[in-house]
Length: 192
Image 1 (cartoon, rainbow, N blue to C red):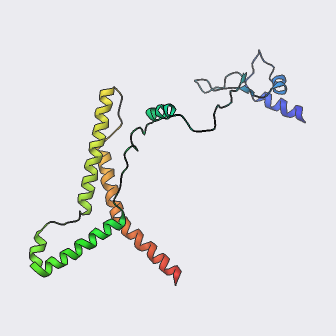
Image 2 (image 1 turned 120 degrees about the vertical axis):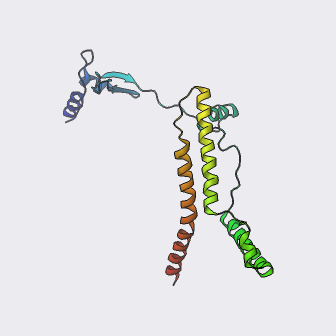
Image 3 (image 1 turned 135 degrees about the vertical axis):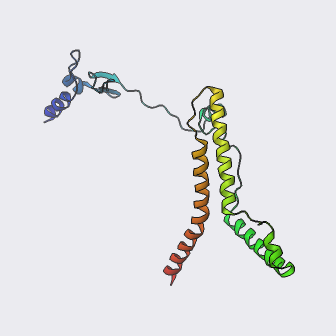
């Protein structure tokens, strides 16, 4: 039975006149393999007996020098060096509530017409989208400039990047409250 399996396995390889594949299968040791790769035209190459190098690794932390080398060749080099403290939803809601209260007080004090003439204190969806699109376009243009200086080819597209950034911003601002309302209704329905 084993001989049949060995013969069947040896017949799947492209024949190598310098190697008896059937015998080589029975003589393989730890770290050895029979290998056939694809040629440029997609045909399999003749089978060869080879040694397989096991992966080398170690347990323990990397040294500061190794970490610096790994970070320098990483495509994310410098991206996460600076901590970013984004505005939380609680802060946004607190600001909107404070603005609404201040506007209500101003309406009582000065009248509705005077307050409508002033600009808004919190930014609108459109101004946020414009701000994000402008930032994305600037970043994309900077990567194109850097690529031309270094001689690399850049696939950055400022218009596409800006449009997708603006669309993402608008979608987030519109979908956020809807998703929150949906989850609240779902949880409220489950708690009844």
